[in-house]
Image (cartoon, rainbow, N blue to C red; front, side, top):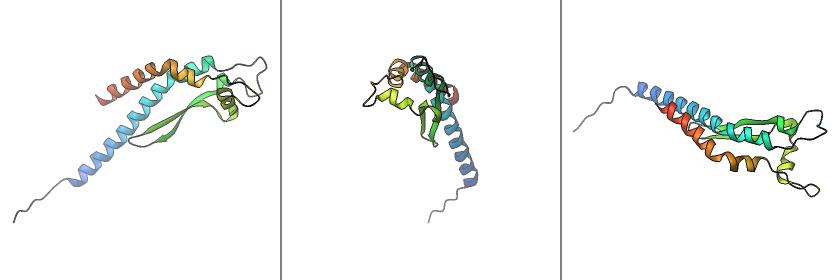
Amino acid sequence: MIKAQVKGMPELKMAIRALQAECKSALKEAILAGAQPIHDEAELIAPRSDNPTEVGHLADHIEIEVAKSTPSTCLVRIGPDEDHWYGRFSETGTVKMAARPYLRPALDTKQKEAIREFAAVMKRRLK
């Protein structure tokens, strides 16, 4: 009969939990850094009105928001804030209004830069 005894399991569990928290933090930092170039470009090309609403121009109210974050997944949303919800209509158009997209062109233009920013943060955090 062979017997084996494993010691240090509580310490291993603590180390794994700490590693999970560090991975989640690194992923969140990296995805936010990657989202920033897209956000900045969207602000530049978003519609500006000659007669802004009382809450201001859509272009001045585009935000980056973490929509979901787990140890292995981080999802961000780039788009108009709650007061500028109507900005979605500019992106896609309506029956009465032609589309004036600003988010998709921002993504298309800045996608490679976003990936570089994401990778730079992950490389730094992994060291």
